Image 1 (cartoon, rainbow, N blue to C red):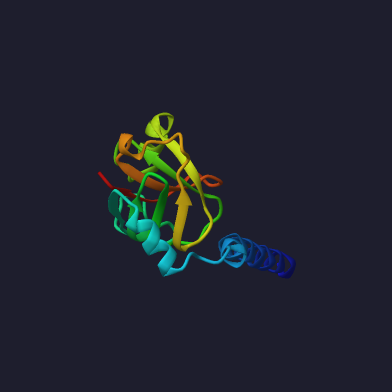
Image 2: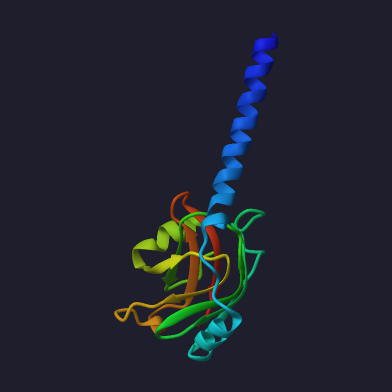
Length: 155
């Protein structure tokens, strides 16, 4: 019985440490966030803006975003915060998305803009081939775990 208790307790500590590592590693390895000046400069070039909110259907304690997202022809900027996590991607969608099911349904019609590497503020360049006026929603998605993080309607 003592060996079983030791095995279970060690497995629980290992699992907790592994989960904590998955959560903290992106935070520890994230590059410096853009300064408020850089975000303001990018927002000044934006044509549209929207709000990331914590109260979306598939947002929860570990998957959320909050703040103002500014969408321009050459960059998308967030003045706000995202829950830390690995492998975040920024997408534009032709329809509002707030669930993983919506994301999966609309993904073929979306365009991936780039990587989100910081969790407080970001500025992501928009590829020249993308016309942001053809979409109306910006989405942060965790590619590794297929998790919805946040979205904002900007048009």
